[in-house]
Image (cartoon, rainbow, N blue to C red):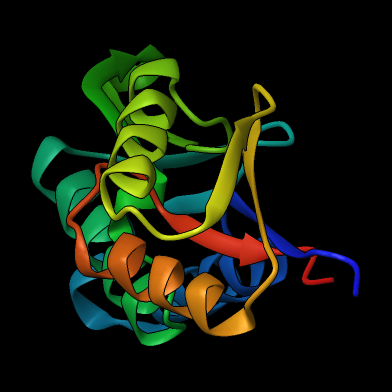
Length: 163
C-alpha cells in the first residue's frame, strides 16, 4: 500500500475574503455613522486590501467592520497583516492590510520539529512554501493534523492535497 500524505500550508480562501470585503463595503456605504465620509474598502492588488476614509477614527471603525465580516466568514484574523494608519492627500487616512500567504521559515521549522517530537511513524518534508507529511497509517496523519490545529501559530494554517 502506498503512503498516504497531506500538505500543511499557510493561506486563506480568497473567495471568502472577497465576500467579506464586499459585505463590509456595503455595510459602510449604508451605515449612518459613515455618511459623507466617502469610506472605501477594496482590493489593492492581488494580496492587499485598502481601507480609506475621511478621518482617523472612521478608518479605524471601517477596519473593525472589515474584521467583523472576515470573522463571520470563518477566516482567521491571523491571515491579516494590518499596516500602520497613514495620512494621504486631502486630509484622508488609509490603512493597508496584507494577506498572509507564505509560510515563514521559522514556523515551518517549528512545525516539523513538533511533528518529529510526536514519535509517530510519519515523515515531514519541508518544501519551502508548504510541509508534506507522509505516513502509512491515516490515523497517524489525523493525529498530526489534530496536533497542528491544537497549537497556536501566528499564521492561518490549512491542510490540503490529501492522498
